[in-house]
Image (cartoon, rainbow, N blue to C red):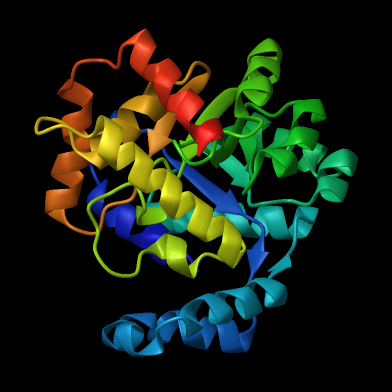
Length: 278
């Protein structure tokens, strides 16, 4: 509901020219959803008591999600984002998880182009949760980027998509390169365990694959998270990877991957092969 933009606006004050800002548009929240989101900081200490119910809550919340990409909504939303971010332009304005039908019609193209011509945004793109959801974006005229999961756990169909995206000149923003916490040293329940994007069986398979990577590729000088980030950054066609961090220690670990030696061609091949073997 804009809180991340407000925080970024404060942090980037006086340093706007040193960063590239990407934000999203499209999600609408009802009264109940707004109250829950506002109460989330107060409820965080109780998360452990919810156990497996958290995934069920996310499944219900996803069914309640409403999206609005109308011209009026896009115009209103961009002004709100600019105000919260404390800037007069957004570098990458992304449609948040539009459906295949919405992308095939792409009725909002003229509105986005007008925002770009007016200087309020520099370019626009789309986000998706799976490769299959992003495929229609390849035929959308004018888009500059696609954001979708790129990780050791998310390789199905990715190589073909990246080849087609490169042919179109599209940038690829790799989200969840740490597999929503699975590809880290996190203990206990991770964000992946709460995910509504995978079945219980799929989550179990992802955890098994994570353990295989940990046994074979983690070394005293390279953590699982750093291995995962190097893989995402060295995936041909990926422009940038955007990992999460919930502490300064995690952020330092993520940044450490940038100074690590690159993965060898042999390691990259073995990492890709293992994903299909487990």
